[in-house]
Structures are given as structure tokens and as C-alpha cells.
Length: 423
Ligand code: GTP
Image (cartoon, rainbow, N blue to C red; front, side, top):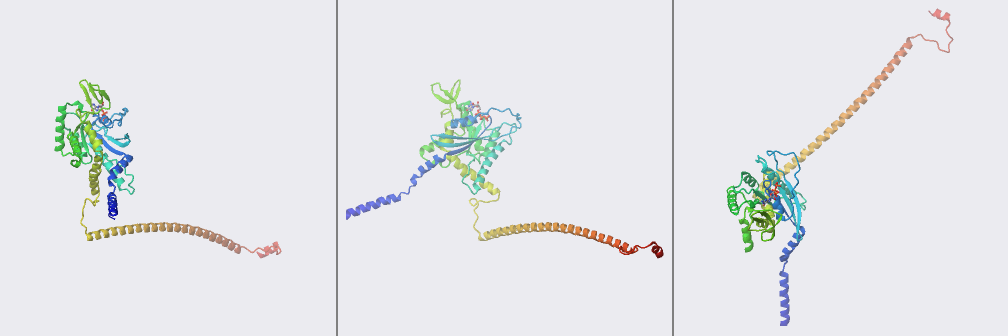
């Protein structure tokens, strides 16, 4: 029996072990499969003055021609005082080893081109807001299964490689958008500056940004990640504002390698070389390491702040932002006011219906009165005619009465003598 007992006990232990396994260790696999099936999406807004290499950088980031150079259409030339900022949205679906990424690139041609740039940031801010608004509207609909996320997840701001410091327009624009988007400043065409110039320029930009209280994108709680990831994130953050070089063209290096880069008489600047520029770090931030975090931060913080502020402005305090103590009296009062408002509304509606019915009846009565009147008039005319006829007849009869009686046709015709005799 002891062997039997032992076996039974072992079976129990195995069973308990199996029962204890819930299966959530399998969740990452589920998540992975689902993500692959659904694909990913990212909305990037790229803003900066014309010719700073925005299209080139986006195309370099995704290694394909997403933003195409349009052939300039000869439109009526806008004067430099009236150049207006327009918003352009380009969509692309890209596939890498079976993983799909739906990309939305939003640009603002005309930004910074006008002599008077006072309000050129407004159209950009309006675009960001309107994307939040569309999401809010879609989210408030009853059927929320098809909410399309068009909010701006990453905002690349291209700084001109002047080597001095930020200009007034740079500061104004960044200040206007930094609380609505994940702001990622980049120094455009950094191959036009020397390494030293870049270091100094970066320093000055960072000081300006700090002084102006401008917030740039910061990954949250990354310190809890694995050591290697923390190190990598720190390296990425240390490159702010990213000094980038864009090029989709392949060139040959002096040592015979074919690389994406820009070729100069003094050598080749390689795009994908961390010693040459910060392109790789920027791509890590945007795509490889923080794509989901950029989206999460947009949804959980930036959009939530916008939504709360908007609803508060509309007078709707949200449950999660305004904590009111539960007061039964106030609640009762609120319900009574609501009930009264409902009653008043019903009364007003009933009054309106009544009013409408009365006016319809009145119109009908007026119509029948007019009908009656005309019929009465008709009858009266008829009667008057008849009276007139009768009176005519009477007159005739009376006339006939006063005339001397002519002998009846049957009596013998009066003789002349008789006539004379009568006279
Ligand atoms: P708009 O569409 O006018 O706003 O221009 P953009 O900002 O999209 O610039 P685009 O990518 O069209 O580049 C303008 C010019 O700059 C092109 O001749 C590019 O080859 C060049 N260019 C782009 N990136 C770089 C760069 O990193 N360094 C240098 N030196 N030139 C660049």
C-alpha cells in the first residue's frame, strides 16, 4: 500500500502543478501574433522652413520615397508677404519582413516663408487640435469600433543649421506645440557645420529650450528597463537635438564601401554612421525603440490633457479630474432640477403643439367662413334675382289688370257700333 500511496501522492502533486499554470505566460505570443496581424501605425508631423531637408530625412528614415518631390506648378506667385501655410498629409503603407507599418506624414509647406510669420504657427496648432477633436468626436460616438487615430504622435521640428541660436519663430512654434505633441527638435543638414560648431549649437539650443520652458519628448520610467536598454535610451537622449544628415543616395567611401550619404571633395558624410551624425539615434527613437511609447504618451498624457481642458471649457467636469464629495442633498437637488427642466421642456412642447393645432383650426374656420360667405352671397344674389323677376311679373300683371278687358276669343267680335256706343 505504501507504493500505491506514493504513486497517488505523486499524481496529486503533478495535477496541482498543472492546475497552477494559468497560461498568461503565453500572452506576449498572443500579443505578438495580434500585432503582426493588425500592423502598426505612426503619424509624424515634420515642420521647418522650406529646403531644410524634411522630405529627404523622412525618406531616409523609412528608406523609400514617401514624400515625393512635386513638379512645381506655375501658379500665380504668392508674394513673400502673403505666403500661406498649408497642411499636407501623405500616407504610405510599408512592409518589412511581413510587419506592416501605416505611416502618415504631415507637412506644412509655406511655414516660415512669409515676411510676416506672426501667425504661421497657428495653422499648425489648428491642425494638431483638429486631429485631437476628430478623435474626441469618434470616441464619443456610440459605435467606437472604428476610431481612427490620426493624432500627431511625433513632431519633428527642423532647426536651420545657422550655428548661432534658436530664432524667434523656432521658439514661438515650439512653445505653441510642446504641450500637444511629442516634440523632437532636429538640426537639419548638420553636415554643413563642423563637429565643434554642432556641439556649441546644441548647447545653445538646449539652454534656450530650458530657459523657455519648452518640453521635448522624454521616455517615461525607462530607468526600470534592462541595463543595456537604459544605457541605449540615455545615449539617445544625450543626442537631443539630433544633428541629422539625410540622403537616399548611395555613394562610395574612399575605402570602397557603398553607403547612404553625401559626397564632398573632402570626403563622404555617411548617414548610417553614428560618428558622422545622429540619424541612427533619431531612427531608434522614432521607430525601433519608442514608436509605441510615442503613441502611448500622445494618448495617455497629451490627448488626455487636451480633452480635459476642452471638456472643462465646455463646462463638463470629468469624473476622473474633478472629485466631488457625494452629497445626497445636492444630488437630490440636481435630480429635481433635471426633472423640472424635463417637465418645462415637455410643457413647452405641448404648448407648441396646442398653438399649432389652434392656428390650424383657425385657418380652417376662416376658410369655411369665407366659403359660407360666398355661398350666402350667391344665394342672396339668386334670391334678389328671383324677387326682381317676381316683381317684374307683378308689374306686368298689374299693367294687364288696368288694361280694358278684351273679349274672350270665343265671344263674338265687338262691332263698330258697339265700340262707338261704349264711348
Ligand atoms: P520643401 O519641400 O521645400 O519644404 O523642402 P524640404 O525641407 O522637404 O527639403 P528637401 O528634402 O526637398 O531638400 C532640399 C534640398 O536639400 C535638396 O537639394 C536636398 O538634396 C538637400 N538636402 C536634404 N537633406 C540634406 C542634408 O542633410 N544635408 C545637405 N547638405 N543637404 C540636404
